[in-house]
Length: 550
Image (cartoon, rainbow, N blue to C red; front, top):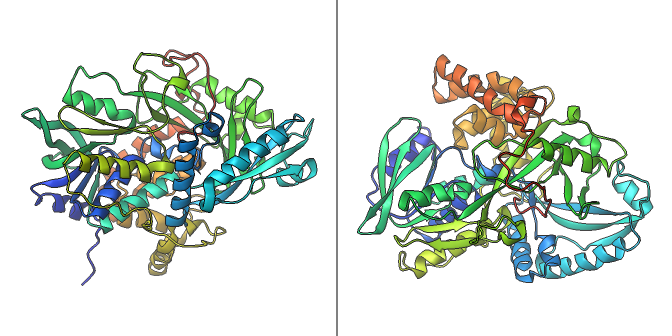
């Protein structure tokens, strides 16, 4: 008799029907919500997580792929925030070593004083990391800089400063955290939308939700209800109080993705201050290079935000200022935009510096707990603080946090980075087993990329993937690396998924059409997707900063 598949959506849905009351109900399946669910279930609380679409569909799959301490905060004198982020960076690199790696960054120096200035600042960064440091920062001369970054602009180059930070795959980590939650007994459900809160005698008792696949309605009751919905935070708060003041201000970050030839070495580039005072990163990632990011305040949020034309032009122009080998729009393999859930200023100010990048925990009059702000790097600490808050409010019996040393599903030391399957960590042999059973699954999904058909089957069977978008955007990352290739691979992926999930031809055709519509947002040559005006943008200026989205 075959072993029960604990990641089967049907078994997960069936399991929630018999539970009369949960200890913790988490709304939202991005980095924050998944972190809270993991913290909760590993303490021994009966835990349910509901996500309206797929895990990490929003902001949490659209970062700059960095696990970082936040050098910018150091310049601002926010030592405590830097220390916390560096500590969490160290824990994450230990707990998910198959997804988090040590990444070297080169800061090119074009003025005489920059070498001294950045070397001193980054020595302080190293010191604050303590025992969890990823390596010492050093100054390098012009020759060494050119050797390490072959495409860097040579005119007036004086040298560089090298420092270490972390690099990771964001949505792969989200999937692995979801799997870890399931393994510890949590019920985590994607495509389950919370459409109302259950409030009795001015106290929150639970949530009403709909299974978006079957259309079935549910009511779930719990002791601690956690709102961890990122840029959708206010949508949940307005279910409780339609007149509630907005707590979150969306800020858009855009990234362009190029072939590795534009940054052929192992080093990333960090440009801490361009001519007009902005910041830019170029980071190697899965044999591509990601360049960004922007910081544009918006009026509205959406699941598929579009880049503004001025954001695209700014990244292209600024990146080219530091390259000998110039990039053009035609070189952009993919473009993606993410929305940061920044805490809105109380006075209605639009100044970015007045909008906090740190996380905040709010408790409504009904007892609803909301966690906002933060970033991937500190998701574990944010979760710890949130569950501790629920305990302090008397909603949960006191139990100690267990996640500081908890290995994430798939954890494997020293993965072989030459094989793209390294991201599966300890699951990698399972991919090979699928190929051994059916050799056709060893074929590539697209000739330009290494992803295999077996990965689609594995995503559906063991990684809670339900749609073509789930697979191509957040399981194998093809949409983020090469949008055209993803569009071309969609029919094959739909066919594999339909077979695995028992779906018919009509489902398959709708999946292909839906994915093509989504993929337009990632294809720069589909110009009608990109906005050549500022109507949705409150701030007329773009500000570049140190990756709060990461």
